Each structure stands twice: as C-alpha cells, then as structure tokens.
Image (cartoon, rainbow, N blue to C red; front, side):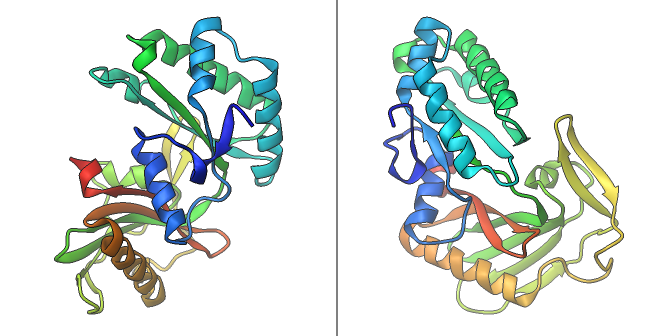
Length: 261
C-alpha cells in the first residue's frame, strides 16, 4: 500500500498518539485492534489537488472492510506543524463510523478543514488513524511518576468524562513497587458516560452496584503490571484504559513524560 500502512510499521515521528500505540505493541500490551495510519503522501496530495484519488480510496475500502467491527470503525487524526498549534486541535475524532460512504464524507471534510489551517504545507505532518470501533463499560486513566501509581476509573465509554467538572471517579493508589492498591476514594456511580456524535451524555446506572469499586483486584494488578513494564522501558508516563463489553482490558493511549511536557 502507498497511502496506508500498519501503525506498528509507520515512520511517523511527530505523533504522540501513534508513538504511544507503537510502544504498547512493542511490549505486547493489549491495545486497539488492527490500527492503520495514513502516510504523509495522502494529505500532501490532497493539499495540492483538493481531492483524494481513486487509488487511495481503494486502499481505504480494503482496510475499512478488514478492520471494521460490526461494520463500524473509528477515525482519529494527528496533525503537526511547528509554530501552528491550531492545526493540532482543529479536526475532530469520529467514533462508530458505520458505512464506507460516511467514512468518505468524514475524511474529505477533515482533509478540507485541515488544509484550510495549514501555513507551510512542506512542514506539516498530517496523519489519520483507522482503528476498529469498540464499546467499553469502564474506562479511566493511570499515571506513574516513578514513586507511585494513581488510577482513576469511571463507568462508561470515554475518558473525556474525567475532565468534566463535577465528575467523581474512583481513585486508587499504590507505591511504584509491588505493593497492592488502596482505594483512596469511592466515586459516584449513579451515571454511565456515553459518547455520541453530539458529545458526551449520561444515562442512569441500573447495572453496576453503586457502592462497589469500579475495578476489581485482577484489573488493578493487570494495569499495575503493564505500567511497571512501560516504566522499565520508557520511564514516567500516563495512559488511558478501557474494559470492553467483551470483558477485555486494553490500553487506549500512552504518553511518556517526555511527550507530556
């Protein structure tokens, strides 16, 4: 392929999202399934011609059919241009794209939007990540600073809710050594957080016990084990995790300390 490549093999050097997933794959830590990433050529050609050519669409169609879970995928983006911070945040990520026609419209719209914000196209590095769409029932964040590990967990599908004012997650902490976790705060569990095309919404929790911790001991041990392995190879870091509806626990994103500053 020319316009798409497996994320594990991409040569992108400017994307913390891509680099974090590559690091997880290198350590054999469960993460998003079958991720692909666009090459630099896709956006550079779009910028010059203001369209995506038929060969690129053929590649996208093949990958869409390969990675779609229940005929649905997620499209994320990473856009970098030195001294142009606006480019990094201008295009949205889109979850649960259910048809290839919808995917085409969304990708073209994002390319058009990004192209309108580029200052120096020769210096811009714009990539799109294609991954299988999944639903989660629990999610959260973890930080490891070398001294301690702190985990925050909520019910629902998106860690974006952790940044919402008034949200009360479970908080667990442990020394960076092999000591067990302590539940330092039991969060408020009356609502489950869902992500829609129109933003974050809440629904009433009628399935998970209100007074029980969100994460069990096995999940805490898994997260701690993965975090300690990551620390051994990459140092201090933060990450986002999810428990899928299948019961599988995965790491969605990883940021090392170098990338956070």
